[in-house]
Length: 218
Image: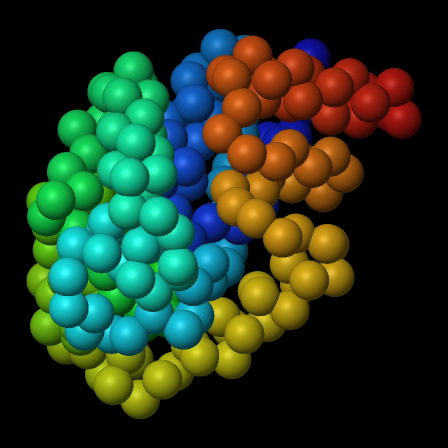
């Protein structure tokens, strides 16, 4: 018996360290699920007040801009780096370019239209947390888009003209309707919400639940 693919909607932010970790854990959960899964990423801005060109490191941002004690920030970043390493991610918070992610979200909507969203979201996370690239700049986003298989000129035009600004706003509004206050947040099959970077088995179980209910309905 074949069943339709299960669609998963994921709200995340490129500047969210748990979102990249959650992406890896979700992917592991999908790999353990013996069915087809399709994915759409949706926009969420954790810190829309972030300057595009914040001067300083991730630790500077959290301590100065968010008012957290420096020692607490350093310990937190070390902990997150260790957890990221457990899922194969080599975070480098010392090189992170803090920036507003609004343009990056617009680029992801453009990539979705072109069937390249999953390629670009991976490129953006890696660029931000591992490579220290500036994902708030049009030129850098265009370069990353080209690496993900997008046409550079078309992407540049979309970013410069704000073509997908309304789509980003609509995603953020939908998150409010769902009551999403933090990311990553996964909506499995339009029915079940999974919040945070859960263990892979949690995602696998949720997918199996969605599928079993779909079969029962039939």
